[in-house]
Image (cartoon, rainbow, N blue to C red; front, side, top):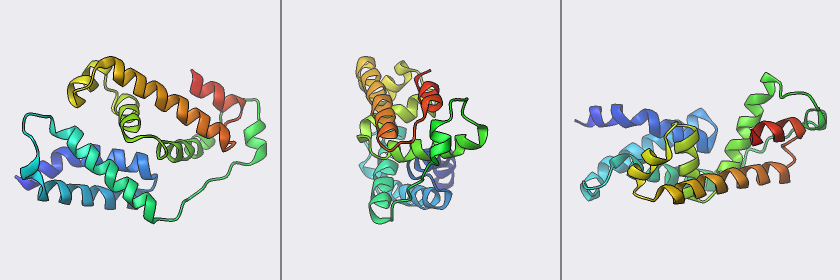
Length: 170
């Protein structure tokens, strides 16, 4: 039973942890901690509610704790690539994802979760609503706020050039 439980949810939990922490080993550690904590407290879970949002909440909390205890890994962008008017180079995309991960870490938990469910998991607003028990309009608001805050954070840190800014708006 435990093996099936872990097998069923480990991939999604790891995906969230990797999105939030940006480093594979940190994500693996947070995933393992999440699974252990969930299994330890499984008796407290309300069977009337879907289990995945509960697990993702535990994972997000583990990631926030991990971020709070580790030194910040701040990426820098060369001024040439920031001001370059051409499209974002493929090699630059990895760096952009690191910048986005850092911005994601500053969001409120509900907005980050909604953003990741929509963009990473590809869920519709209706599916999200059913999973977390919130109205579709609320989830649309959270995703919109998350996008707005991510772009604002990237601009504040100078991580967006004109090409990147246009890419994120599209």
